[in-house]
Amino acid sequence: MKNSTVLITGGAGFIGSHLVEALLAAGYRVVNLDLLTYAGNLDNLANVEGHEPYTFVRGNIGDQDLVGALLAEHRPATIFNLAAESHVDRSIDDATDFIDTNVGAVQRLLDTSLKHWRSLAGAEKESFRFIQMSTDETYGSIATGEFTEDSPYEPNSPYAASKAAGDHFVRAYRVTYGLPTLIARASNTYGPRQYPEKLIPHMIVCALGGRPLPVYGQGLNVRDWMFVTDLVRGLACVVDAGLPGETYNFAGGEEWKNIDTVRSLCAHLDRCVPAAQSYAATITYVTDRPGHDLRYAMSADKVGRVFGWKPQVSFAAGLPLTIDWYLANTTWRQSILDTGYQGTRIGLRAS
Image (cartoon, rainbow, N blue to C red; front, top):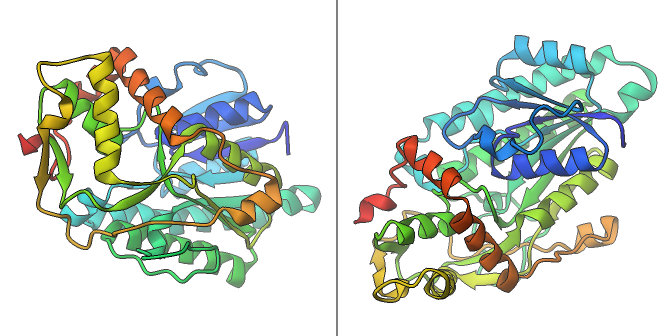
């Protein structure tokens, strides 16, 4: 509902910052609650800072006093929870933060939202929505075909398990208490501002730093890629017209083996910033990730029918756009390195 307020949690992150911009452009008022942990970056929101319909608050989604006060003050029609620990490698090293944030804090956010919703009346109560951002990884791996919204959960990593648990709490609060909740789920999303622990920006940072490009196993794991602006168009549809109890899967329909993604990235870097040898010559195969899902694939048929949504940016176009953004934004890239970023468990340390 345009001109209403949306409370976005995790809005200083990759997807969150793009969603903040999209909703502001569509005429919503936005309150952004973000703890600014390692992947949250206010530089991502430099374009909207100071705009009257936008408010930033630093804090934890599990802080019930803070969230309760924000809900009472701003009275959002929608809470969109994007705050999460989101990297598989980190969850393998230590799952504690993932349980704390993706399960415990989500439950407390739901509890605070429920108390607020119960205090509302009339149209304000009827229009209220709680949207949970989830991931295709909750479904696990699929050899052939595509997952749908009705597919069972089979998470294979601590990260995916924590997201699945959070989703279950979101559903339970709707069934048990009547809180109008819904879930949006995305395939592998890429684009500008993504923290460089994820595959594409990680390879860019490694390449520009003159380091080997570490690829798990033989790089045969398949990922379905979706450009971030396509995803946020879909998420804006969920904010505007999503129905309680529904799940909406957004997928790019662009399945690529990891090794082919890295080689394509190298080819573009070879053209833009040529080195003494092709960047592809620095690809290094490393021991595979434990429990590594071989293939993710979701159907986006439902959101096509319901919202008329479909991806607009092909991977062939989006990957060069993404690389060029990282090449141009040297200050942003350096700000990440200045925080002490050392890569993932196979990352920059692979050198």
